[in-house]
Length: 403
Image 1 (cartoon, one colour):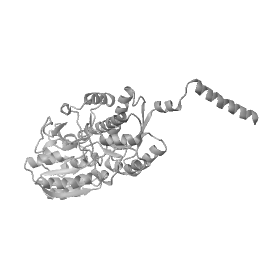
Image 2 (cartoon, rainbow, N blue to C red; image 1 turned 135 degrees about the vertical axis):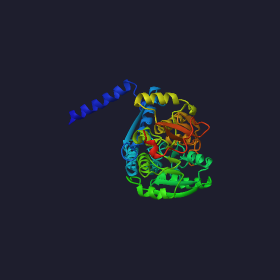
Image 3 (spheres, helix red, strand yellow; image 1 turned 60 degrees about the vertical axis):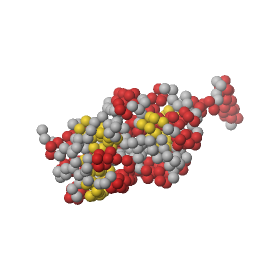
Image 4 (cartoon, rainbow, N blue to C red; image 1 turned 90 degrees about the vertical axis):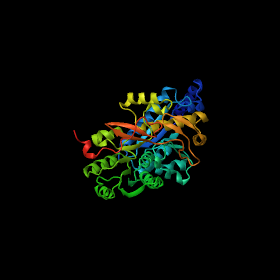
């Protein structure tokens, strides 16, 4: 027993001696260890198409900041899990990131539904979160202090379509939406905006988010004879609606969808049927935006991933630029001070301007409106910066498939 004790004591003393001999300082070690960020992102499930673009924006920011020396002289590490597009899974993963993985900071997940769920976790532990993938203002109605919107509010996504329709004298509008937090919020706001613009809502219907057939709803909508259809969608239901409107030969002058048309896969999936469909976009790689650093972001993203970045990639990258600015302003990783800095920042990122109100809701950014024209996605609104103009009316479904 004595010998074992002596060996242990000698080992401990030797360790102390080595530490002293090398000038080991625990405080210095803490200041040089990596800064750890954690998140869940929808890499499978109903949001996977957009979630992967979103994750890549995060990763490119990490690559850029580490190449420039890191934050506060420390490298940045990410822990990113797949929440499977499920809010309950997201809650469990953010609890794990904070309590088990002990990350320094959290990043926002993708989608309003998952963000709404995990915001209660970040609030409990007082972790500031830039909600890069959430646009439903309902998330901010609960008085949370630690969650901040970086995108244009979801209720504004199709303001461009409403503006164009009203200016062109169109009167009859149908509104349809998936049964999810964001799309319901959008539809509720759209009803009021359409009426305020002097148009009539002739039909309003919803469908389950995982629907594989919306023909009954579209048949009812067709009977209302709308000139304009505004739909609160994600990718899968946006393409489903387009295919079934084509199958039932439901022709309208404007078909505008919230999420879906902004993705390159939209045209790949639909082929010529995509032409004429409009959609919301938070950002596009066009010179007229003139945001600092946008050229480098686009070039490096295209080099790493082989395609021009979508707005989901730009919104996550831009949110990290806001986080970066807050950390540099504070000069430490003190989460409470960084929360306060994020709340008061005004900064221009590659994604656009960032400024929030006292609730944490973005007030500086507008959504764009795009339209697929001859296989290319064109920015058509706001008209003062849009390089292209809307094709109105959109081509009939049968004409799209001729030739």
